[in-house]
Length: 171
Image (cartoon, rainbow, N blue to C red; front, side):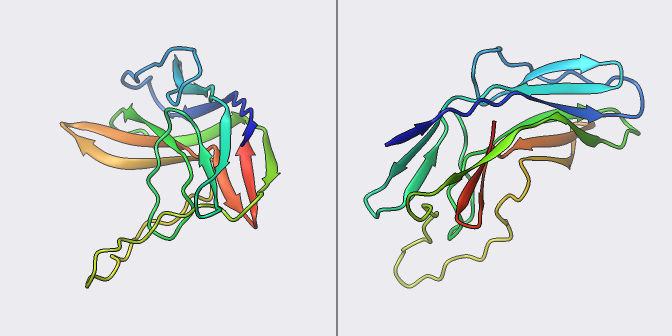
């Protein structure tokens, strides 16, 4: 088993064009899948510190990527890669934008093909088509709607991306 250290120290700032917005939940500064949130006069700075990246081979001989405390939700037939996200409350008339203050990336050669999420194997059923596509950006900001009168956006961190037989790792 090969273990790679993923040191992720970058700042993500949701730059907002008006007054400061509602609170975002802050995580402890320890390594975690949740960011430390720091409000500013015109936005929010999110800082992630990720645990070590773990690569291993599964019984099928495919490479599995693991990050403790991260989630895995990719469509059947696509690479099984970690992600995490945080919801951010937005003030009424603000157009959210994302500015990456610092980010460092490197590539890792895969020792074997990357593990993919299997299709359902129930007899007599066809796999459901998925409208989800694998992530193509390390950080994404998507406004997701209104809940109880509060506008919400999701900031998603994809610390590992599969590109041309290699892993693009944010560190």
